[in-house]
Length: 136
Image (cartoon, rainbow, N blue to C red; front, side):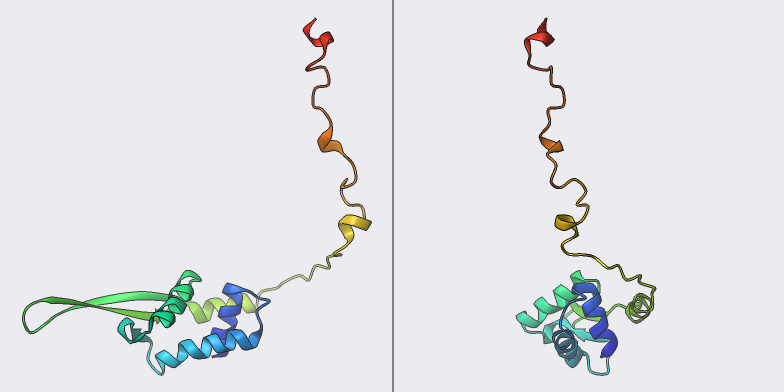
């Protein structure tokens, strides 16, 4: 469950409260149990929406299979499953080297500011464009 919690935080929001991500992971894993896939018909609409969200964030994938019923009709069964490479991707992401960058939240105002207080953007590009000297 810890790996899925990390994956949820990684794909949705690293600032997400770990308890919220853990709750989402527990809710999803509650459907799967010890299996690697779950049949779509077992989901309520709100749970299916959560699974679609997980699919959008590249955590889940879908698959389907067809079977022939006793009366000869084809029946398609849809399943949800976790991406097989998800665990490896999460471990690689969490073990990467991240250089901490100290950002001064007031640096733009009180520091150099990169010309924030100048009005260079208001200057006319061609000052002679609309003068009588230009038209001649």
